[in-house]
Length: 210
Ligand code: DGP
Ligand code: NA
Ligand code: NA
Image 1 (cartoon, rainbow, N blue to C red):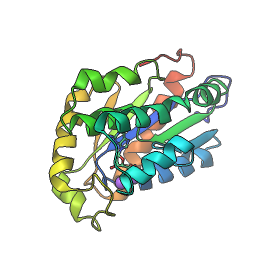
Image 2: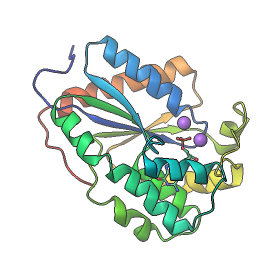
Image 3: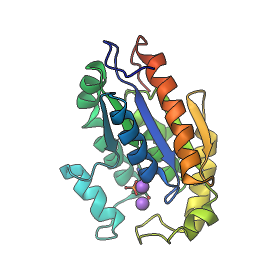
């Protein structure tokens, strides 16, 4: 059993998925599991709405401000960049980060508006590369049924379908797709196993960039 904190670096574990895919609850569950194992772990999320850039993003999502598609894209990216150095020092110091959304949200949501994929990816290059991306796979219609959406800008089923298609095209070898329609406890169990394996495997691996 690997509790982490044995001198290796922490793991960068990202959860991705559509709105209402269950990411945030699963992040919270995974975080408390890992902390309970004695593994130094923090829960992060993007957008981080606490920074000044994050407040602009939050106003945009609430439809309280209008911004050009490329402008908001770059703000989301800037919100990740402003956290990069802290992220790096946490990881190198042995802390594992469980992150609710990352660059893949950045690309999938903006591409769903019709922006060029290559253009969308460019500002993400140089951010830290995750060790593991867990995609919580839920049908857009099913996600929409889950207690409804909260009324933010992107919470429309047609738009989410397009986001899902773009997520699909972004999958690479670091991705693990988990069926998010399974019972919460089953999903939770799968995430625990993926995370524990990832944490022990990446201890001696170098951090890399996207
Ligand atoms: P959340 O706080 O996880 O509910 O995310 C808020 C919304 O913002 C959600 O609809 C997903 C979307 N989103 C998250 N990250 C990005 C990003 O980098 N770019 C764009 N365009 N949308 C994003
Ligand atoms: Na949301
Ligand atoms: Na969420």
